[in-house]
Length: 337
Length: 296
Image (cartoon, rainbow over all chains, first blue to last red; front, top):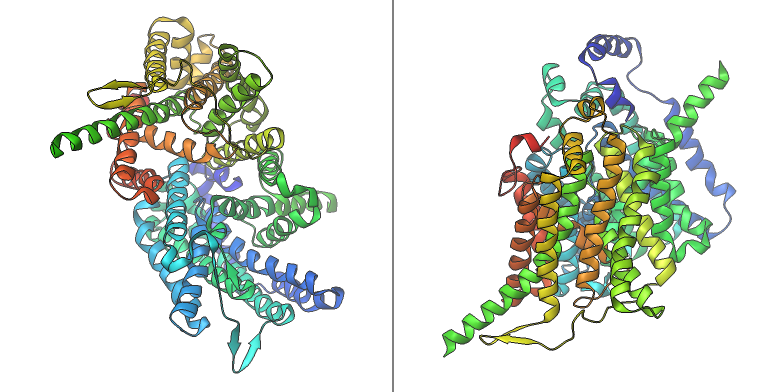
């Protein structure tokens, strides 16, 4: 919430805006450093991992990382909380499953169409919902997510209900994509692309417009920012990306249940964003990594998942409100000096 | 004859709806109380309700008589409310809404997780306070426990209203909610008032939890839905006054019971979520539009 404080008084904001403009003009529009670093990690990781299981974890982290990045654009940068993003994930997953298994569509077309559908829904509900602030927005997004969950759980004829439904193996150009290694490169590629886009978006004018959304509306409006259009735009983009990865994840795991759409899943996504660092693209990836591995590392977690998640949420907010990556970066800078 | 039967059925649904609605109303009262004093929406409100029911069951299982279990259950919820403020809200200082959403959400998960660790994931219930003998009025069946629920809700509303109108502490809480700085200047310990409100909120929630435990099961994850419905009730009532909160609860309870009585029982829970979307979008001030001074 650092940005919130920065935006607190108009006097602080007005001089900040031109200097930020000046900075961008002198800097190359493409930031490659962090992207090359992540690319290196993705390229080298398979050499460090030996088992299929570790690759499987890497794929899961990659899928979550893309969603966390897209959610972070909404929550961390624009300051608009969503407690219903698991709903969009489920629209992607179930859309893909229904279109490909029940209606025989090519799976990738299914992913594209269901991601577009999620985007359409986000666009439609975004206008009225994003006018709400703080608690009200949290409750409204939660309500939206729960309605999606209830529809998926109850429309058994379409979704299989609580029993879930299975998906066919993805075939691309006659090749079956069924090993964790194949999926690793696909998800790694998507992650790198989204990471690169997000890094650049954050520093582009639209990124600064997003950050202005976090502060008082009148302030953003007086800087010539179309508030509601920008809010709806980022909400839609994050819904599309989240649904897309929901579809990819469904194709990867081959089986989905309504559990993927429930409230705890939305909490997990928010936890990734908050733990890694709100407003930090790299933080979203780190957060996704930690939250995905947490149950594996703490095997005793099984029955205490909500207890541990809850404690982490409170502790991070009280002691490290900026999240892991920004806090560590700050410490490193202080140490350097 | 057929018409009379329909009327009886409708009346039965209304009575069930009013009973459930009173519970939502009690939880909504907790929301309003906490929100008015400290401008926090306590996402853990439903889980405090669960704690009340669970504790009462635990005390009863330990061999103590029902009245003591009921009292200890409600005090347990109040205690957890105090603890929540001391351990999570106060350390966060003047955090904005987004961190506070996350903190109370985290607290809800911690309470739920702790309850699971202690009591497991089983379903529990309490015996009815005054027997299971149904009362028949005009062909409609009323359980004595429903009357307990209604009576307790009414009593709580009356006592709370008196408390805020006529006691020094009540007025200090009101002053804190209207302008904390001015209240501090007048010598009011605003922190203590907020702490008190979190405790009172927990108390109200657990009164609801204990009262409903003989009718509906209590289990570790019951809080999420109940908390959300309590919030819907509070927003329906305008998130400002107590009577609005209870009325909001009754409307939600009756709508829900009608929905499941006349068909779509699968989507009973969706009513609350649809309502909240519609209300927030079209009537952000709630049905009974709280007066401007009370809403910030």
